[in-house]
Image (cartoon, rainbow, N blue to C red):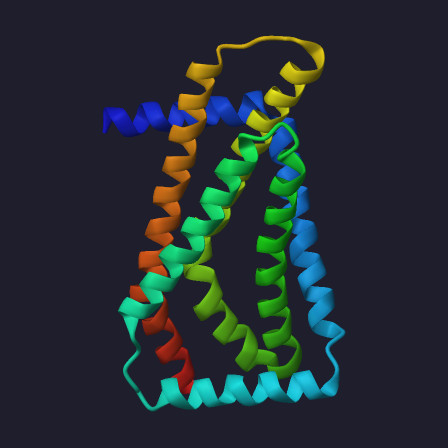
Length: 212
């Protein structure tokens, strides 16, 4: 309990100290969500028909209480999130990596925005309910973990950039350890989100599919 309290206080202090960066990464993520939503609205009829066919086929599969391979879902979630957090960690260790960090966050938001907007646009209430069941549970962990990792990677990359061009030094070893630990904490949150996606989300999806 004491460890959790200290961790929470440390994170709150960190966010307050780097509030500008967190505002920036939130704006970039929100821009990605907006971009994904707009892209879903611009899909041509051929793509819409293909996606709708897949969507309703998947609903029928869920409504029939067909078994879902939760192990496969977990494996894919861990692999995708592992690649994402590793990419952020690498970008944070490059003095020009902050631009790629913002690109990764934009893409993350884009995927969420596209999924929700497509379901809401073509399938009205059905799509909204299914989107809430399929997207919301794990993203309660995915989104804050992604923003935390993205902000830390951005900050560390900018520190390296300043050191390179201004000659200002900083305790690199200590900062590197702190940076890596924060990204490991974010990775743990993403892993927990993967468990939610593989265990809890399928139950929600099947429940919603059975009443649609």
